[in-house]
Image 1: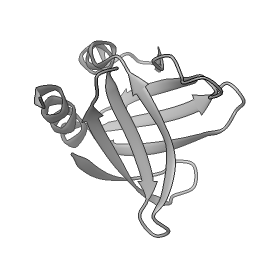
Image 2 (image 1 turned 135 degrees about the vertical axis):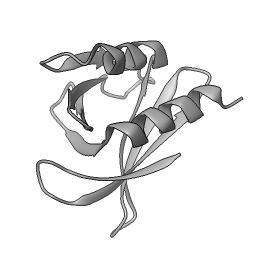
Image 3 (image 1 turned 180 degrees about the vertical axis):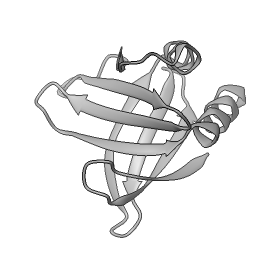
Length: 117
């Protein structure tokens, strides 16, 4: 499922895709103007769901599933503020991206991806 959002850092429009894979939940962002793919991360969907349910005051950090050989490891920081979810993906070398999306949209996408065969 695709969700439309904005980068809180740059204000750039972005899309967010969530897909179920054999390794976990693939979270992928794209810049819709340039169609440039932005880095991907695969996380444990149960850890992500727990972060949404708990709604901590601070961010929750989820480590990405083990990266392929030669790739930098990744981590996902998630912050829930009211009806907004802010996702920030960082690699161990400091590269990353962020997106803010609606809580309900994100929850629907997570549910749809989790239900996918």
